[in-house]
Length: 253
Length: 349
Image (tube, rainbow over all chains, first blue to last red; front, side, top):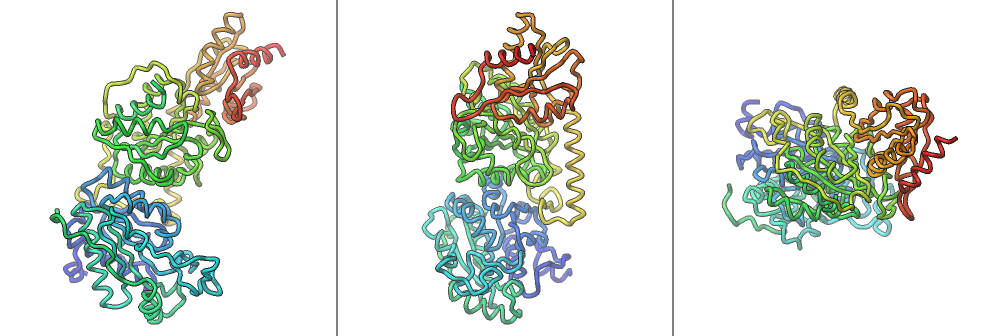
């Protein structure tokens, strides 16, 4: 364990086994978030506000203060917290169900307010914890527990493209979609997550990173197949890219 | 000054730093006033996009130990209950106002006392209570605010002020207190979520706890609510010592009881009144202590009968309890002469 602490720093709690399923993308994203906090040296003034669902477990694996918000409301919790503690770093961490189903209103208004908070949305196109139901990001034709013949866009609409909805908002200063389906994707995701936190540390405005990940359990696929599907079908629709980067202003405090 | 404005001034002068709200009649004047005055005290009013967002931001800010508040009316309170339940579970202090209007549904903007049930019974799921204060005038709003803040911090719980929409919009003379941050009396360092610079990791887990943790949390809350029930009952009463009839009412009808008792006593009628100031905990003791001379109790409310249930529970069948109430759609309340006529009818039966 000591060797790993030397490598990953103090933020990531390596004493705990995660409750994420084998092959789940949350493990990688949680580590990348911890690394970003570590790199910026803000661990002691950082508070994580996590959602309901698998993403709600993320804070158990980081030695930072954490608040488990009600379903979908973590962006509003973060707004309130940041107002009261403007010098602290606050990020929200939740899945696609929490963030863009029940919490879409809170999310978009938080983004539009442009306050310096950071949101990490982990998108696996399915409600994981509740057992594989359709999410707003479920792909067209994708079979889930509640779209047994595949998502039919004529009645169930289209997979939601969240960063595309935020792109026009002036208060959003860093906006990206990444994936952890491949090693190259992980490296890019690491960079984007770090930039998103840096954006907040500089006090520039709202920052958002959507991370496309596989959920072998919810997708009912073997781990390898889930990664293949994530690296093909999912990112074919949810194209990884940096939509906006206005972080090259000001100094890191 | 309008009593909604008195509420805002009292919040700001007693140390509230942040106020989150969404416009709704008849509570909106509170947030308008707060937007103007809070910056002078180093705080801010933040208008959110919905009451769901309001109460969530309230909870997020309260996590830091800072004194925060909101103001709303019935349909807004309905939406807020998600995070109010969260704050009870998480033991977070805050001050809330429900400027009550008539319901159900979206109801109407006419003042009412229709949120007694939802205020005193919860509103969110699970076994929880918030402390409910029911001032009956602008002066009482100003006078009781420090007490409300102390209760919020002492018990680490949301404190809800309920003021009917008529009283909330009444303009009357009020002496406001000088600025004093009452939240500063309380040390929040052993629980506030301020980052780990001065404490080991804290995690506020109100949902995905283990079964054992959930049981312990509920038992801890039960013990806390028992302490509040034991120690924090407040009421005003007059003329009950030798009364044949006691009139019980809160808020504006409670205020009218003073005149009712004076007038009826002048006519030689032995009438007294009890005006609950805390609606939760309900002042059972005021009713348990009533002398044997009391043959009847009349409960007057600006609703179809809600507090009357608590009065019946408090007297537990010992004294007959009658009810007079009216709400919504037309004139929202009974007048003093209506109340006196009903009291006479009961006395003469």
